[in-house]
Length: 397
Ligand code: AMP
Image (cartoon, rainbow, N blue to C red):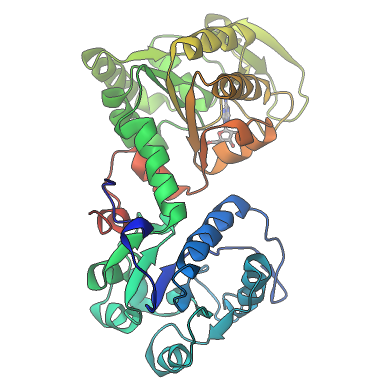
């Protein structure tokens, strides 16, 4: 039995289903300008809808979109885009609560889909205001398919889930199952890769991971802070020198928890932070005073590949280098491909997530072969930090 109530526990026939989705798509001149960034997520939402259709319920959709500007953030144009994707008409109600919503819902027939206006047009949404929760509780049951918003205790994520019988949609379920397989109940050894710019933005994440994983591979700009904390000269590299003590404390906590910390042994260094800047490969204790480390070197890649050979589970957030600038994407791309090969061979379960990580893994052409890629950004990071996500907690069985 799942730890969460899912659509398997719901008999939707004849019920009005209030479905919380994330339809946060870019808009230009009142039209959805690009419906592709969240394709994977939307595909899963439509799976949730299809599931619902078997019982032919009427389904009001709900999704927030951005904060400012009523017209710019209206979901009206999104209704047409959703209709195109799910292949059936989608109605629209100009408010998600009150008379406007109630009247539109009252007119729905079994099988109809109605998109309710942006919940963030009401200030009480983000404050989890009981009056908004009351207003939103327009369905017989509530299905949350928006993991990306589940770290927020908002009226449409947590509040209404406590008010109505609440279930995880298929996209939410898939995400929860993938995350559980990666860190909740993973096959060991578990390897985590944490890269990206700064230690300071990932302190909680590092603190949680050292307690949970067998090996923690640190890359990106944040590796420089750790190397500096170990007494190495990192030249002009991005480095938070004031966090040297913090880095040493993380290393000590890892030792205590028997988590092996893996830092780069070599680096691709350049004198300028720009694409195709002249570069060279050096051991990490030979970085020149006027050089900066912009990627991990080939020896580090080989070492990481060897670790991936013994790993059964990989969880990844953050690139190994300045992957937006060729050729400093090479380390990230090589490790991403190595992980993808092992997933394809059935030897590794690999989950990646967090904004830049998704771009980096996509750029490497490896994302499709990962076991799961989370596009949830903040919610994914809070989950990696070991925090309880209110929108998820409210769905517990
Ligand atoms: P984050 O959002 O913390 O995952 O950081 C991602 C950013 O880290 C990307 O924009 C990368 O360009 C940057 N980054 C990764 N490695 C380095 C590095 N060695 N030096 C400077 N920036 C880096």
